[in-house]
Image 1 (cartoon, rainbow, N blue to C red):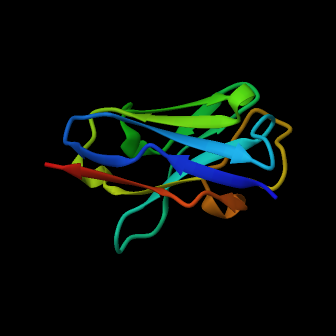
Image 2 (image 1 turned 90 degrees about the horizontal axis):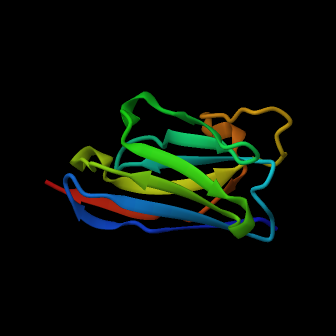
Image 3 (image 1 turned 120 degrees about the horizontal axis):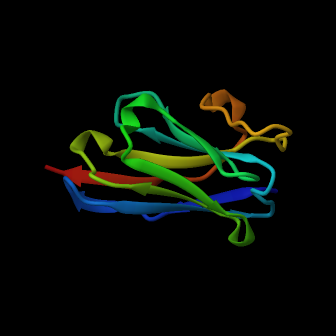
Length: 128
């Protein structure tokens, strides 16, 4: 069974940076879309970014404003989310996720219902 392990979160000051990692075991990312989502206390889980691992094509939610970069290392079965210029409103639990089926086109979804396998989440806390 596919398992995803998210890591790299922590407590940082506003303006700082973090790199989150999502490692897959029991499966692969090669040929699949991988998404990053986040959920702040009292709010719904929202999409941050996704990537089609085969060619690295990526999509971002509007609030990213160029501060987030998603990337993949298929050999390491790991997807990264680099977050720069962190803001207090970025405080949330960040989750990575993968769909059930591999993709056949260079595209990924920002809709959470498209994703079946989810990591446990990693906490990002940004102090002002």
